[in-house]
Amino acid sequence: MFAPHKQYAYCKDVQRVYLGKAPALSVVSNAFGENVTKSWLSYQLIDLSEFSGCKDKLTTFQVSSICEVIMSTWYYLTVVELMHFFLQFKAGKYGKFYGAVDGLAITESLRAFVEERWTIKDRYERQQASEERKAQEAIIEQAHRQMTAEINSTGLSLSEFYSLQEDFKLEFDELIELAWLFKLGYENIKHCK
Image: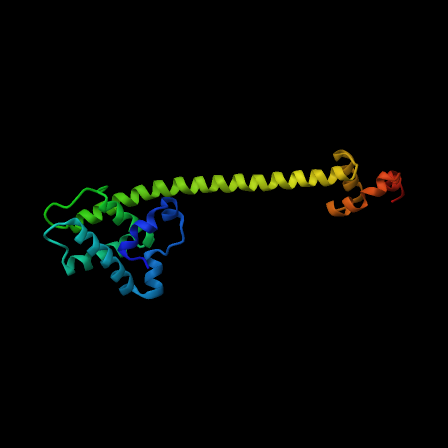
């Protein structure tokens, strides 16, 4: 599912890369075991090694060691975030290998990626919070317009409506239903309470 050939497809929507629901490495390890996580990371690393075009590829030992470093240091990264990192590495964002695929170059690049990630993630979270706040404000405004329309349909002014609601300790819906009584001349009922 999260195979290297899916990197582009899963990383098209960069906001979703950082705010989506893909599992973190630690979650994958807890759910399926560390061997599954290590195996998945190995595929990503081997794909990067093959992509590089270098004559000297990563050895089995190097792949295993890099996997352990990533799993212990960046366990909180999601599988899609890591796919995004590998895609960006392939795109040349983090330099290139010279003659041999270098494990330190990969982990140094991952460290740079993580620093960028915090900034990007923070920006997207603030943007998402702003959009949610605007949507909530629109819902509140719509509810206010609807309440005002219902009050206006009673024939009472806003001040009359809220005054009667206060005097009679009625809920909004109760007063909407009983407003016709007050329009029929029963305004003095409060004196009879």
